Length: 482
Image 1 (cartoon, helix red, strand yellow):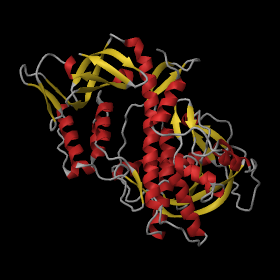
Image 2 (cartoon, helix red, strand yellow; image 1 turned 60 degrees about the vertical axis):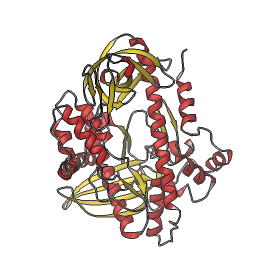
Image 3 (spheres, one colour; image 1 turned 180 degrees about the vertical axis):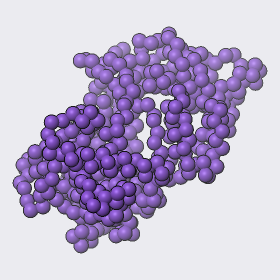
Image 4 (cartoon, helix red, strand yellow; image 1 turned 90 degrees about the vertical axis):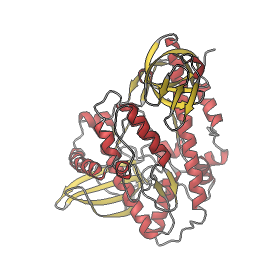
């Protein structure tokens, strides 16, 4: 049976409780918002630019940077969604219910109606747009001196792509000086990132290239450009300033916490690394310096596998009302401020900052349950997106049935092995019944299947060659043979 891209969308939407249909009252509310925004007294006449992927439609962040005698002045303007989406309106209730936009290949289920997400809130070039501004002053080494949050209006000078910035391929010079200053600041921020030991993992995510009939034509590795890092570092600055502001002004607010890895996962990582002849015991000092491990293996052929093993040892980041720090980024406090068009917690952060600026009271009594809901919906959206990608990769792999591929054991269960296939950007299942004849016992501590009669042993991290067997694209499953 042949499946379409829509079949994969529908299954993921059903499996994870997503909703692509808008309530009529929300659409009506969105239509009443004027498309055009008139310039007001808060207008900042500066050449802000947005930098996004080629297919982006919602532009929620823009930057302007200049070199000053003290160091740098970085202005990060974020779409002021809270101006349009106010508490307890039908649109706000629906945005909270969704909590996040879900990004599928070639399709988006937005958190807000497109009238807002792609138009009136989006920082489109040449259009006046309301924004929340993080106005940050940094010293010459890139350390934050002070910051201020304020409401403003901007008019983006250009909608740039990562490739354009990387290749320096644009004709308008009005923002060239700003981008040059941002590039200098970026070098300082990357040095700080390395110094504090933030994780920088290369997981080897796939880019799906489609033909005209929405079938995957080929799969390419996602390229990691310097321009991606530039924007990420600028957004991190805005986010940690927002977290500091909340920490100083509220007993409970919104933090993006990434807690210390669990000991059992660290033990498994240690065992897996030893299988690859990497002597790493998982001591507290080694865990704190995981970035050094990731850096030291960067030239190995199996770097993607090792980085994936490190990622699997991490806890999942979550939204919480108390600040617990961010282990991966190595920040004592962190939050999300820069994407209110697509993340509800960012919208809450904007409201809390605005309330304090305007000396208004904020009700945080329901915040804990709201953030638990947001964390779960984020997880659902992430899994749904990955499911559709896996469906498409499985469909693409049908042409390789009966062919052999090299792989690595990335998961061990009593019923078989999960095999990562780097050439195909996916994982398949090798059932224990397909292994060489033996009486296998599952060793949980060593993450291995140990043959008791003939001494066969298959352990986490081992290299293995397998043959592609049956493929169930709608379930996203590939069966393998040894």
